[in-house]
Amino acid sequence: MSSLNRLLYFNCVVETGSISAASRIFDVQPSSISRQLAALEHDLGVRLLNKTTRNTGLTEAGRKYYEFSQRIVAEFDEAKRAVNDLQEKPKGKLKISMTVGFGESIVLPLIPRFMKLYPDIDIKLELTERVVDLVEENIDVAIRSGRLADSTMIAKRLAFNDFLLCASPQYLANNGTPLCPEDLTEHQCIKYSYARWQEWFLMAEKRTKLTINHVISVNSVNGQKQLVLNNTGLALIPRWAVKDELADGSLTQVMQTYTFSPYEELSATYAIYLKREMVSPKTRVFLDYLVENIVDFDS
Image 1 (cartoon, one colour):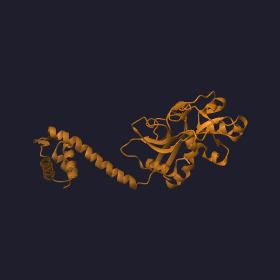
Image 2 (cartoon, rainbow, N blue to C red):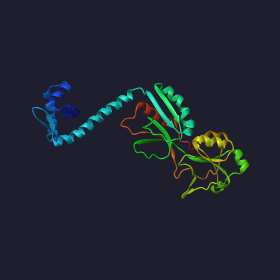
Image 3 (cartoon, one colour):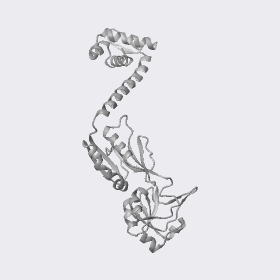
Image 4 (tube, rainbow, N blue to C red):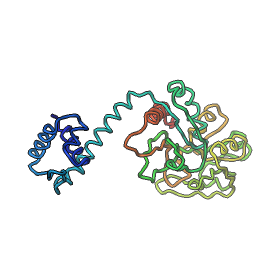
């Protein structure tokens, strides 16, 4: 008889209050359960149960052992479910919330192939700049930038943001090209109005907040890109948002030898999900798919 079965018998006797009740649940003779409980006590060298003609109760040592025994059996059941989940076909509703810029530029183009791979997953996508509550809004995965403050969640990095200072060739032809950070005081600058990204910083040995005199704010990365493409000014924008425009020449990176950020620290974009005992198959395959198909845009 395995040690696990002894724990199962012990837990059942504690929970039902008698060996006879446990024997009926497991469909074995009461004497068999009694022998295994005696063997368990012998191995531990301590009495766990006080048996009377009416019921069976726990000793002080038995109460402490029961606390651990419950957890061990629960972990075993969780392990069985984990193995079974691996065999199940991922299915069900998958709710994903993401920022507009990263969602439109990076995630949405990947969705058609994911749907072909997992046709039984019903995907619901939300593109928003607001910070969502995963629990209250029943969201499986949120894609956000910045540090993770909530210890009840897990963050899987998808890409470094790598902010670049960009302008259109026409804007630079009309207004001149800034050669150093101090030159930005003379230029129109387009900021992303996310609460924590409203300033521009020079990320040198000493981080310095830049002085900007002429500002337009917009509440999305794509809004920034449209303004800069239409010759409105300079924007500090993630490389992943402008990689195609930099490649085809419709945007130009300026001051390439400097490192900038709209936040006091360099940042990345993460897939965030709740810390649970078991991540559902639909969530797990989506996270794996993102990591496999999103590369850092640092080159």
